Amino acid sequence: MQAQATDLDILPAGGGLPVLPNFSINLHVPRGQHTPAVTELARYLRNGFARLRALA
Image (tube, rainbow, N blue to C red; front, side):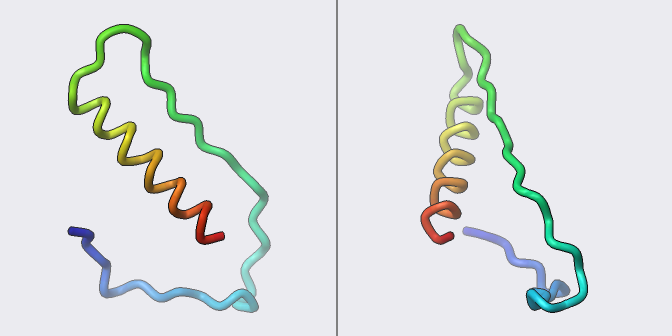
């Protein structure tokens, strides 16, 4: 289940804000043994960003 904030608005492209530069986020999981929580968090984040890329 995903929580949604009810007090936020989506601003239009012409809302007067500057264009943001491209950026990247790197996820590094240490080598060796991973706890199930680390493995699941990495999987969740990778899948979430993959879905966002697919929508773009």
